[in-house]
Amino acid sequence: MGETGFTGPSGPQGNPGSPGQQGVQIPGAVGATGATGATGPVGQQGLQGFTGPQGSRGQQGQQGFTGPQGQLGPQGQPGQLGLQGQAGGIGPAGSQGTVVSS
Image (cartoon, rainbow, N blue to C red):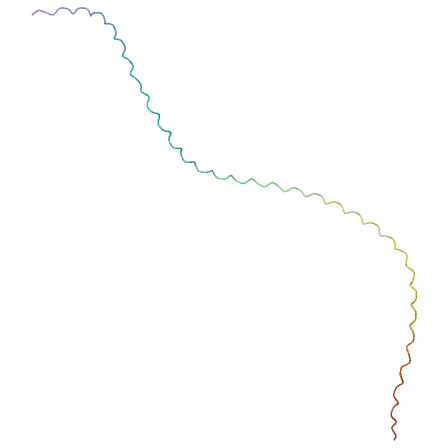
C-alpha cells in the first residue's frame, strides 16, 4: 500500500447546542428555631462609694442678756396685837400634911 495522503482541513465547527433547562428548585422546610440559651450569671455588685466629709458645725447663737431685777415692794403694815386671854380659876387647896410629934 502506498503512503497516506495529507489530512484535509477541518470542517466548520457545528452550532453550539441549546442550553439545558434549569432544574426545579424545591425549597426545603425552614428548621425550627433553636432553644434560647441559658441566662448568664449576674455580675458582681459594684463597690460602695466613699462617704463625703462631714459638714462644719454652725455657730452657736449668743445668749441673751439677763433683765434687771425688779424693785422691792413696800413693806406691809404690822398686824394688830391679839387680845389677852382670861386668867384661869384658882385651883383646889392641897391636903393638910400629917403632924408628927416627937
